[in-house]
Every structure is written in structure tokens, then in C-alpha cells.
Image (cartoon, rainbow, N blue to C red; front, side, top):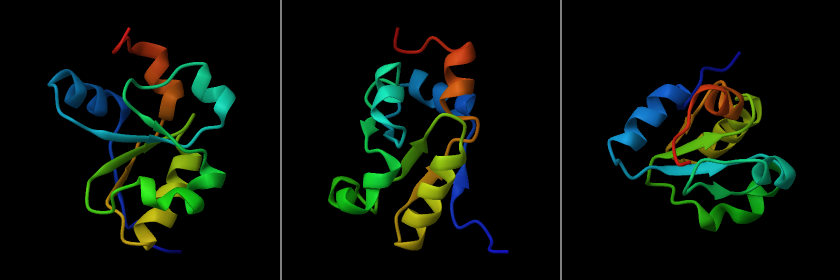
Length: 106
């Protein structure tokens, strides 16, 4: 079993950073219909299956928070991207935890 090569930050911690006006790079890897049902303001949308062809849209040196619905797909994206040298952070719990109790950006 491999060791995680990326960090994780919970939705409430990411929200706290946004409320402090921190400029965060957020990558949403959900499918288009999921994205359209609601997303974090300012996030970049690249579905998981398209990440390989969109690597030029992600800065490998900047910390990027990766989100999906529950944290599973974002975890896979983080494994892949961190293996390529990208500085990524998974958000376990994903948008299901984000939308359930947070109103940031509304």
C-alpha cells in the first residue's frame, strides 16, 4: 500500500481560509452536471477524465485544492497529480459536506 504524497484539508478549513480572503486555487473534478448544480466560487472545472489533457491549466508550483462530490475522485486526481510533481491538497468530504452546511459565496 502506497503512502499518500499529498495533504488533505477539510471543507470547513478551506472555507475558513476563503473567509480570511486567502487566494486559493481550487480545482473541481466533478462531471459537468454536478458542477452546474453548484460549485465553490472561483474554482476551475476540469472533470477527472480530462485532467491528463488539461495539465497546462494547472500550475504545478502553486498549491491547488482538489474537490469532487465526496473526496474519492479528488483523491484519485491528487494521487495522479502529486505523482507528476504537482502541489495538490485533497478536500475529503467534498461538495456534499461543503453544500450541506456552508453558505460561502451566496
